[in-house]
Structure formats: C-alpha cells, structure tokens
Length: 389
Ligand code: FNR
Image 1 (cartoon, protein in one colour):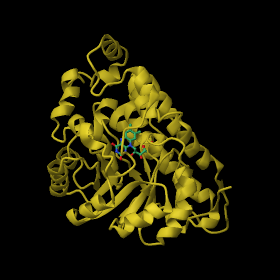
Image 2 (cartoon, rainbow, N blue to C red; image 1 turned 180 degrees about the horizontal axis):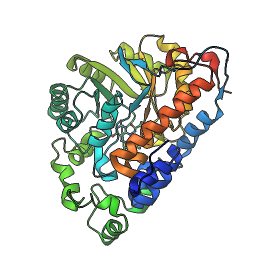
Image 3 (spheres, helix red, strand yellow; image 1 turned 45 degrees about the vertical axis):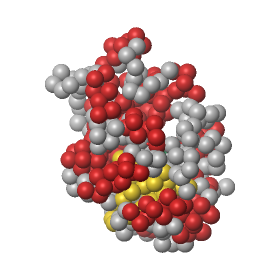
Image 4 (cartoon, helix red, strand yellow; image 1 turned 90 degrees about the horizontal axis):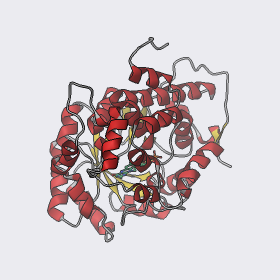
C-alpha cells in the first residue's frame, strides 16, 4: 500500500490507477496545445483507434495448475537482458511536455533496467542523457538528414556517449498532417503569444519548476535551439523523402553496434531491412501519427515474425497502454514493446515521478496478468495463450 502523502503531485499520481487515469491528469495539468500534440494523430485519427481496437480484441487463454508464485518478468532483447519486455520509444521535444524532459525519462528507464531511446529531435543531447542516467542502456533514434556531416556528427556523438543501439526511423519521409496542431496554432518552441502567457499562468506545474529551479521560460524553450543536437534546426531537414535501402546500407557500414529499423508494417519491408544489415525491426505505425489508415501493428506482427524467423529482433509499438498489451505482443511474436504516449502522459502528469508511476502501473499489470494467465515468466508466453480474432 502507498504511504499517505500531502504532496499534491504524489497524491494525484497515487490516485491514478491506469495509464488512462494518468492521461486524464495530464490533460488537466498541461496546456491544451501541448497535450493535443502528444495525444493527437494524423488526419482522421483512424489508425490510432485501430491500434487500440486490435489490443482490445485480443483474447487471453489461461492455463492453470502450475506454480506462478514468483513471476520472472525479465526478457532478452538484442542479446541483452532487460527487467521486463518494455522500452521507452523516442519522442521529440520532450522538454516541451515537462521541463524535466528526456533526462527524467532516461533516469526512470535506467533505474528499472529498461532501454531508453532518445529522438534526433529531442531537446536534450546524447551527452545530457548519458550524464543524467549513467549505467542506463541508451538507444539513439536517427532521422537521416540531407546534411551528411550532421548525420555523421550525430552518430559519432552517440557512439562516444556510449549509446548501444541506433534506431533508424523510416516512416517519416514527409511530415504528416495533424489537424489539432494546426487548429491549436502549435509552434515549436511555443511562440510568445498572449495565449502562451495565459497557459503559463493557468498551468503552473507546466510553466514553473517549483521555486528552486529555473522556470520554463521562452528563453529555456528557445534554448532547444542551442541544445547541441539543435532539434529545431534538425527538424527542418529531418524529413527525407529520398531515404532508401542504400542509406540503410551506408548506416550499417558506419554504425558498429546494434541497428534497428523503425516504422515497419510489411513482411517484405522487414526482410529487406534485415538483409540490408539491420539487427531487427520495430513494427510501428508511429502511434498513428504518420500515415493514417495503416493496419494496427498487432495484426501485422505474426506475418512479420514468420517472415523473419526467430533470430532478428522484433519490437512492437503503437497503442500499448496496459500490461496485457505486452503479453499480447509477446505471444504474437515480439521480443518487447515500446511505449510513447504512455510515458509522456506520466511525464506531463508529474515529471519524473509520473514516469516512475507509469512503470509501476505497467509492471504491476504485466506481472499480475502473467500470474492470472497461469504463467511464471515472460519466457513462458506462447502463441496459444492469445487469440486474435
Ligand atoms: C513520437 N514518435 C517518434 N518516433 C520517432 O522515431 N522519432 C520521433 O522524434 C518521435 N516523436 C514523437 C513525439 C510524440 C509526441 C509521440 C507521441 C510519438 C513515435 C514514437 O516513437 C512511437 O512510435 C509511438 O509513440 C508509439 O505509439 P504510442 O505508444 O504513442 O501509442
């Protein structure tokens, strides 16, 4: 049981019992334009609903009469053990959601023995993340730009900072249209308008970092542009409509450690990515934020695993919000899942403590669901435990 507390942030985090509850808290504590940027999706937002519907349609088939007293949640991804099959997906501009930003997420990930992926358009540098969470497993998500020197610099710095894995995102040849962002007049960083000033007054926990540390000001948000990785400048050149298998082969030759391709939905695309040298794929529709009307990732997963065979890494994201979603993905062929919005809701709801709460909730749900399914470990999950109509 949680200790009683008077701290209002702790109280509202403790009262949140699900990722959906944290999302509701985030909606109350974050300016509308920022919340919608996280929560929204492309065009008619059909894919984002499909992702959830696919997870909701899964049936879990329990088998009892074997001991489930001490579930071993650990999993193996890319030859390394992680504490459960959960990874933090790369998300851009994380300091806009909460001033604690990427460093907070990386610290929580490291504390729990889970990998954290930093975005190319993050608002902290690879050096910042390495310093904030020493000993953590850090991945770097790469948007290849047309500026070859910038690409090489990003890779060199990720290597020097000890990052273990590069994730090449391929589903963003052009920016998608997210109507809420246009309607809200979202700019990154937020422009100095009357509306932003009102937001700062109305959402003090978003605008202010208590009394002891620096307030989020336009200066600090603009310092996104001087954060080294230079997210705003990179974003201008990040979307690369000419990205090809040749670029992937170049990256394979250039990067000495593990390499994943993110944004894969087709078995053929997955096989060719692995043939070009990737160690695996991330089955993802970018959380419904890029091409709308794609299939749910879960429904494509079995075919992709069948095409690749058992060895390459297969990670799934898009729509994971419950421990049982992790079981479904594992049973249908994934080594692990990634979460994007789920941890951002926690971050918006309560900074680092909110992200901690996200892991607490998912871990508890995953562990209890394994036991209720009659299983004593992640490794015991098999395809016959799940039916996908
Ligand atoms: C993302 N995502 C993303 N992916 C990526 O490769 N580079 C990026 O910079 C970003 N930025 C980003 C920002 C925000 C606000 C969100 C919500 C997502 C996609 C992310 O890595 C992941 O694929 C999805 O978030 C997974 O879906 P869920 O978990 O959000 O449903």
